[in-house]
Length: 53
Length: 244
Length: 237
View (tube, rainbow over the protein chains, first blue to last red):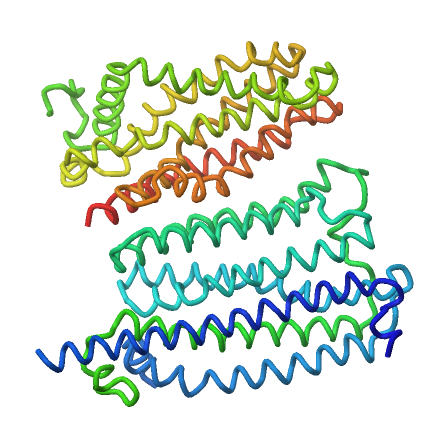
């Protein structure tokens, strides 16, 4: 296992690459969910305004 | 099958909602398979040791970064030619993911370059062109947020994407032109090392994983964009979860 | 409008040639009215070039290596600075709308504007380059190549810049947004233009660089006026 993490001495580079990739992908998905929620509440607000008109 | 029905945001909204999870699942499976091939099956490289394993995401991300841009340009052309809102929304949905792929390509490329060529960054044709691509994406996203009118933004971004697309083959072919202009200069970075077919398989699987991930994310994002831009229309106001 | 055109016998009243001539003459006349503004932009170019030796060491060989690149970057920045002049004032006072509505072909009118822009911005940059090359100790051959490359490259900068200028008309973020949009398009021009001087210094042939630049110019000559005209119409709608 420790040899897997060490990656023949290149661990810093290999994991530096993969971990950051994983982080930004997760960040994109989180941001996407937040955008979705914001869009839904925006649409709900407009629906309420339209309904009471 | 009547494809024109999909140019209606309402129809496409539900269609995208149904197929996106399948692409996401396929992406996850392919990624697991690809990473397993990359780490468990593929042997250690003779020259680069374990550092070469970065190639499995680097190549996928770099390929997607260019492919997404061309797809955006395609949607942009449709948007300008047919004046369809949804085509422009698809282009809008793809941009952030394209920029992300470009960033990943640059980041992983730098970390691959350090142990193999001794430097995080080299101003060679490939890395420079990838950096320019990142700036193109940022420019398109910046233009979209700077223009208030969504329809004007659609058309302006479509035109900018198309103009930038003309840039891409120039940049891409400069890799070959560099080699003829600078013969004998340093390492030939465009020549892929002769690789074992198992490594190629790993790269291919990861590229498909990245592709399906992009499709899923783009479909989810375009759904959010449709909600943002088409809110107020009857089919959204009456929707479950939105209705008052 | 036709009276000022002095059409020859077989020229159509609303054709490309007439449009081009009208636009060039008008824009040159307007530009030369504010000669101070043109002078300031050229001064900016000269000052930027002079900054680099002050910031780094005045070592002669280092300067000779840096020189062509610095001159090119300064040319790029000076070009960027002058781009808003193309459309902004016509846009704000409504003239651009009238120009777009006229029966003249818009790409031709736009080409005329771009030509006038190059004559007042790009051409002075080319002419001044050898003098600035002296600051960097560039020999005659390299200076000559820099001038030639700039002669081919500065029209490309005007053509591509016009697209950006039209896209950002009346948009928030102004100059920096324009720079962000246009600089990635400028980079290949910079690479091949400045690279030509490097090739000479390395003893290699410049023909590859210059032919690439020239083909870029030809593509830009055909594509940019069309793209710019489209962008103008998008901005006016």
